Length: 246
Image (cartoon, rainbow, N blue to C red):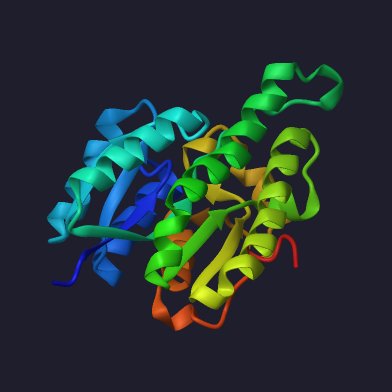
């Protein structure tokens, strides 16, 4: 009996994560595990959007930065879903705590790095044995243009996303022989809650395409990397930023 194939999206309740959940279900036919930390209503709305398109999914609450919680929630889920297999992992959870380094508090530094890097480690480490056993998988890490070129006022965020890009390159080489690809996407200015308070009229002048991107455009790229069509692409970081950094 063929197992039900799941995709897990961390930070899947809003923005890029939400659109990724919807597209993974609609376009690739995955059942989707929608991870969220605090906003249960948003996660349930994402699940309703998936179901409205005829798809299936579940919401799963945990803080990606809490290793024990991640392991407990995912292992409990696996024990109660023996008929299922998670074959796509989208490490999307991340936060910003912007400010100049000279005034940056310890917590602003550590929280941003821990959410991105520990989150990647905790989730991927918990599930990687299953991918290796099944000899198939797709791991997609959501980085940022900040991790590619650095952004003033975001030393913490830039460091976290640059670290994620380095991890992507290394892990890709470790597990490629098992038919598991590991790639990153690096969005620029995207219309989400995270960029809601930014002055778009000024910032879009920095973008050759003269606009902010849409969350669904990033989700389209993630879906491609999660599909069989991307089977010979691994260890890559693909910019999606309207030409702001090429």
